[in-house]
Length: 263
Ligand SMILES: [Zn+2]
Ligand SMILES: [Zn+2]
Figure 1: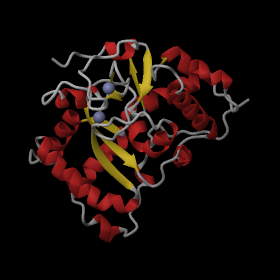
Figure 2: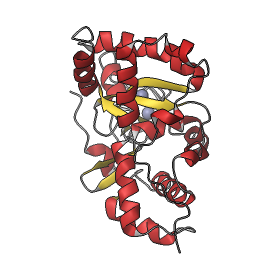
Figure 3: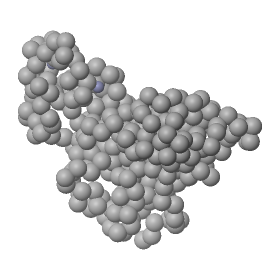
Figure 4: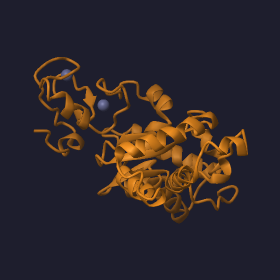
C-alpha cells in the first residue's frame, strides 16, 4: 500500500510548466511587472483581488493600484498566456463572497489535466472528494469526511499525506473550507466547468450562466441562483427569474438559509 510515485511539488502549477512556444520573443511582450504578477499567480493559484492589487502596486511602483488597473494588467498578460492554454479570470466565491482572481488551465477540461502535478493516488483522492460533494444533498461535506475518504481509495493515501495535499488544494482555491464544511472551490468550478456542467446540468445559475453549488433557491421552482446575482437582480424586480413568482426563499436546505440577507 503506497501512493505511487512521490510528488514533492507543493503548488498546483509551476513556472517550469509554463513555457512559451515563442521562447524569448514571446516573453518580450511581457515586461517585468507582468512576469512578477505571473509568478505571484503561479505561486498562489487563487488570490483575493485586494491582495493582488497590493502585490502589483509594490512591483509596479504604484502604477497598478486599483481594480481597474489590475484588470488592464491581467488583460495584457492574458493576451500572451492564452496562446499557451492559460488564463486569469476574475470571479466571486459563492461561499465566502470574496472577489478573487484565479489562474486557470484552459487546455483540457478534465481531471487528468492535473496528472503532471499529482500522483495517481492524489488524483483519485481529488476526484473522490469532488464526487462526494456533488452527490451530497447540500453540495458540501465535513472536513473529517474528506479525510476519511483516504481510507476508501483504490490507491490508498495515508490520512496525513491526504490532509497535506488537501490543504494545498484548499489554499489553491480548488476547495473551500468554511467552519467544518468543505465546498467546491471557485477554481475547481471554473477549471472543470464543462465537466461539471455535464455531471450537474441543473446547477447553472440562470442569471449568469455559471455553475452554482451554494446560493439561494426559489421556494416555488427550487431553482438555485447565486446570492450575488440575485441581489443585483432584485434591484429591478423581486421575483424569481426562473418561474416569475414573487420571491420566497426555499429554506429546506439550511445551507442556503444561512447566507446573508439581501435587503
Ligand atoms: Zn449567477
Ligand atoms: Zn422560481
